[in-house]
Image (cartoon, rainbow, N blue to C red):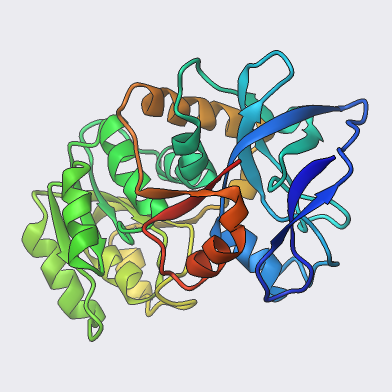
Length: 321
């Protein structure tokens, strides 16, 4: 028998239960799970309102996790929990997952940190590189710098050769944290911001041309950041935390020959995802990459789930199994 977090109804937290251990199919491996993050995608799938449709319940949530194979080697793994019918996720003491969705991790890497970084850091890295074509010496704006994607992006932009990062975040604590992580300057996103006023504040703190914007928020911040891009600049969008639409002007795009790029991790091949995870894990193992996270015992999953869903957690919650 194993222990698993079971979600019995959409809109309610999962609870711990016992169930039979999974039997891996020919193309699967068994993973003894050590840590699982509670991610926005987990919460979205479990809400019953996602673009994947309402899931059949009960099911075990969790789209990713970290653990060990039978030989003791550390791995990250992904699942398609409720993005594909009948598939359970990572929130269990043992899981069976397709071999192609398992990525070996460096020896000594902190597994709880890798769980916290996970696909959010993959998105930040791939959006900067594959999506945005980051090159050495460029100046980068990171919108939504207080979130896990934003925190990772500030660091990964600099690790990827950016000469300077400008961070944008709502709270003073998030802005201070962005500067601790390497941002040259962090400016606030104000409740009454309009496109022109925010663009002016970005211009004031820019040191020369702005080449690339990493945008997990869209809305007014994205429209403002587009206005300060240099000719040929790029904005890569990977979320809409500040609004599902943005007041973008055709003249701004055309005058600067700007590129507006959409990014999703679903566009990565398994090989590309594994390569990105390798970069993330390497930086984490060397102490160059981190994000705010809170480690919570597995038995407290219901409370942790509710706090993460309400935005009341100190960063990304990681369940320690």
